[in-house]
Amino acid sequence: MTHQVHAFEPPERFVAGTVGPPGERTFFLQARGAGRLVSVALEKVQVSLLAEKLEELLAEAQRRFGVDLPEAPAVVGDNDPLDTPVDEEFRVGTLGLAFDVDSATVVIEAIAAGEAEVEVELGDDDDDDDDDAEPDEDLDRLRVRLTPEATRQFIERARRVVNAGRPPCPLCGQPLDPAGHLCPRHNGYHR
View 1 (spheres, helix red, strand yellow):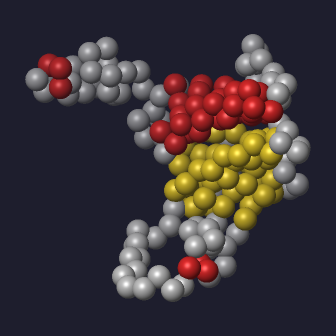
View 2 (cartoon, helix red, strand yellow; view 1 turned 180 degrees about the horizontal axis):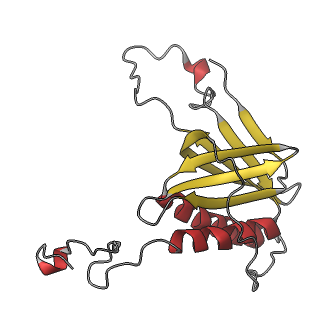
């Protein structure tokens, strides 16, 4: 089975964004460059964790390799909506991060969600030559290479996008719909 690798090294624009009203938002990573536009869908928690892990990756690159990191942008950067059309190429199952020391860039790889089936082999382990193969080698992927400055801008926008949803309930922390919600801290009474 063939797979596509959508590589942007570097992209003209790489952002996290949403489509839909709060409570029904679909989250996307979108890369644009060289006349191409690729949008991949993912979960809100994946966007939040991606921003957090990118921050940790930059701090580790600075500590281990002495990479000069920019400060978090004080001015709001790219706050434009996603480019249209927003056509989902695939749904992200796995996110991978790396720091390329030679080019001092961050590599983000979003890999499509695979089949739910898991094969379990029983018996002799005579076929060890397949152990070096990547488990997701036949899945589509989006690969983006960013400078530390562009990574910081991506982190700030991703955090703004995640926090722009429904406000949390002050008692239980679950998101509040405009009509309220059934709060477990109020024994299921509508709040």
